[in-house]
Length: 350
Image 1 (cartoon, rainbow, N blue to C red):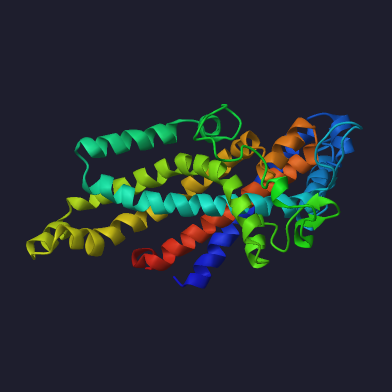
Image 2 (cartoon, rainbow, N blue to C red; image 1 turned 60 degrees about the horizontal axis):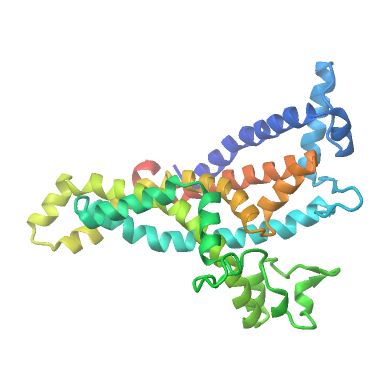
């Protein structure tokens, strides 16, 4: 099967999933209450089946056409206000930036760690490392975040020499000076451009102090996510290496006089890593579920914080839009993983 045909087939099979997600969101939020639903422009399910179907397709049209409504709050209440499209375009890149750093760090740690645990299954060091990874994976992300915040967060414990990292936000106001740069302001709000990812935007504008300050704000949230997802990656890789170490082709490679290092790097590595790639969608789903609470713990202005605020403020229509976008990200990520696996594994292409 050719790659283009596989991509087309994989994309088409994802379409019913998207419509199913929209249907679930429509049914849930349409029954949340007529007054709240009306204020957020979600079509109401009536007693008539035909009218309900029409309402559902109106909802589908609004989702795909970008008619996502507005966020509004009572006077005196602080929170998101304005176009949902605007806040999604601003907050999702902020979350994407955190995800990029988290995945990069997790991969750097997990690949050598998973290889070591898979090839040295027994031993005191292996047992200790396996228990530490299991602890990080088993602990809820919000609990890990609170622990890191307490130990390493500035001002949480007075006199703590380890408290060197900011505990909230995405940048310190004192790092901006009296006159913040134009690329970091939009209608009086701190919104970076052009990518809305402040570390990358600061590097694009050659502003290293702001890039460093924003990177420091990412340390604790990223560390929390890394601890959470490293367990999944490490155990998948450990399983792949451990399953292959006793196979016949490995014994044949050893019988030819190859060193253990060459056997692992040139024979076992590909066969151990490739099958686990197909399961990496689990890691992506776990990451997306954790990022909501991580952003909330560290008051980080991303998609997770936006989702929690819309739920707390009974903004049902924006809530459904954000959940739908998370589903789209999950589906697209799954398709990308499947394409990579298809391209790298000749057995699947036959």
